[in-house]
Image (cartoon, rainbow, N blue to C red; front, side, top):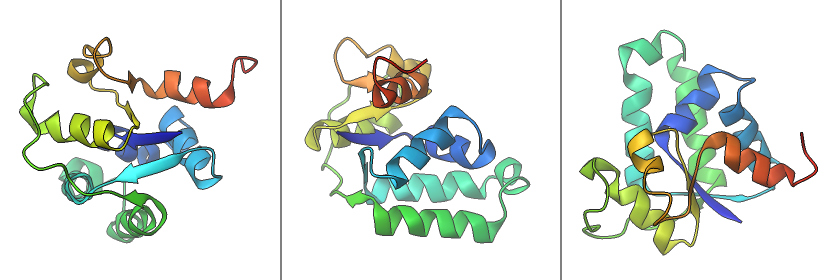
Length: 138
């Protein structure tokens, strides 16, 4: 299985080391799924990790190490050129296009993207994690 993790999920994994997003990243690190990233996603993550509110909780060296881990360990995919407008937030269209091009599920906490679940393979972090753990998981 392949997945694209929205930046909100990636940042949340660092902010709450015991939360669902952190469990998803841990599952990726143990090989339970392939994580797909692109330059646009990495650039958005780097910007988000620079926000003053985030920086007070995630030191610069931890942020840099995390980005490097993603660059080296995830599947690097090309950004689809000029993604079509599909999301209420045009800034998220690249995520939909990336997931589609890579035959991956998009994992996000953004409500406006979750509203598109009938048209695209999109999951909440909890639903994605439960899918990884299988039907017998509680």
